[in-house]
Length: 287
Ligand code: GUN
Image 1 (tube, rainbow, N blue to C red):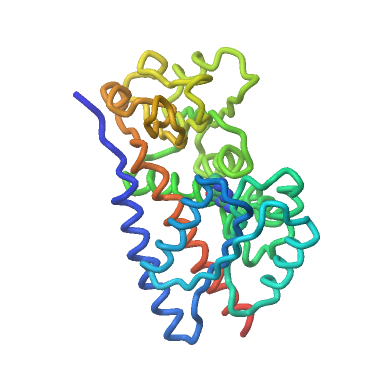
Image 2: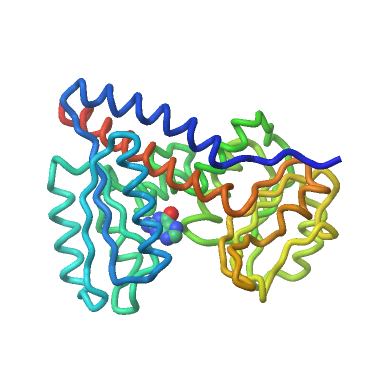
């Protein structure tokens, strides 16, 4: 017996259909949803991610503005660009692709975005609302994972859930989303002792390490019928891999996500959804 594959492409396509309809409705009300992306430098992975985001916007009828900035841009200069986008009524969502080069501070840069246009949910305002269960714009990867659970009617109440990540984009927002659904959540990280013991006790494992030389989630580390969500993408032995080998882990898990084709497409789909939410917010506030 093997478990069920959680197919990110299929679920993302479902989300995109809803987004497409919402975009049409907004256009009928005179609002043309638009996402501005800011890419600093030419990190190949970031270039690909931003290109995928633009293509996805086009697919569902969301306009894009593309800011490609030199890798040596100063904090003052990028702040000015963000300020102008905050003021621009034709732009509803602003995304600064991470990571940023060393001279730019990620917190200062992302905090500069208007909370109403913060489609990554990274501003202190939106991150704070999330901790209080009042979030409107939530980081895309975590909300995409919640969509995956809902698509498969996976009940999270009382489930022992282990996160292997504590970043602002993944682990921290997930912690709060899962807690809202009454899961019991433990966050593991690079300094956690006995990570394997935490994994073996988990009903659900959400792993996002992204370095096979440091961590691999193997079937002996999970409980029978556990649910495994693999957020990681890295290159290992010339292949794109997650933290687990899907073909092996699915032999023991009840549900698991593949890499690629799992969480990745969901991140993009939720960005589109957040852009629509931001465009709708602008409409409500404008009235
Ligand atoms: N880099 C990797 N993932 C993300 C993401 O979800 N948002 C942004 N802004 N940068 C990223």
